[in-house]
Image 1 (tube, rainbow, N blue to C red):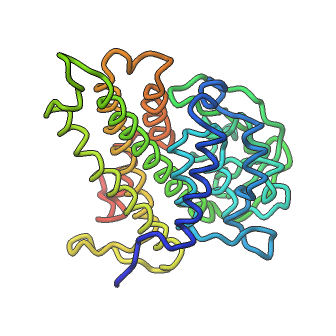
Image 2: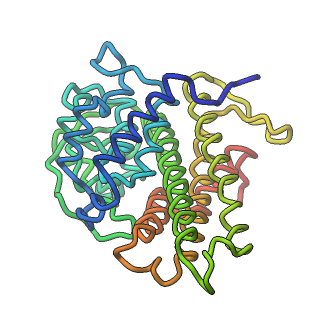
Length: 341
């Protein structure tokens, strides 16, 4: 099956629009100013003016009807700017939710990436500290709960608005069986992967810019071959992650019964590709931020330098679903079949 995974003219326009918006409205100083909570209400209001919260919803519900490929482009710009707005989680949640205030962005939606525990608590919900609505699994049901956000949560490496939320207290609606939530989680994995690609790309640019201006022994440190080799590896990982996220977006949007023919490298199964994209992009972001921070020397650890914010988010964002080893084992079960212990 031949698929063109390059950006369409419309997607190039979307990338230009959102890159320009976040460059102007959300430089890293904005993210720094709202740590540790990691949410800027004024910036979210500006995102609303763009129509971004509902752009992936169906036109008949008042949304923009954007494809998953379009949303991947937007999510990458969020990661590149580490914009402190919950757009990735909100767009993922709206794959099932059609409330007018959510589509307009007047209320914020969050995705509980893990099922509720026996007491009905969703632990460490991304965006949970600021979300008005949370969607997730409770027992054998997919439920959505509307309740007041706590506006606080535990400090974390990624400066994310994490918080525990109740799956049973508030205005609770059962949407269907637990399997219904898979659509939301697949979209969340995909868009989080795209955001991590953005982090990796920005970290590479920060590293390249720094080694061009920083001098040692009277020459820029970027002239040293070891530094050049370390940075030259990064575009392969970044472009690979970008390609994989777009393939996953295409599959989730267009393929019903995808292939899992790993022996012939023919995989068109959307859920598998979304998980692969998340794992691959997380590795790319961790590697890119590690090398860029390393080439900054001691300054890389200083709070006034931007690279440390990307370094922390690359790790925090990539760990929120679960330990990568556990996620990889889940992917292996889907690809090869589960093994009884």
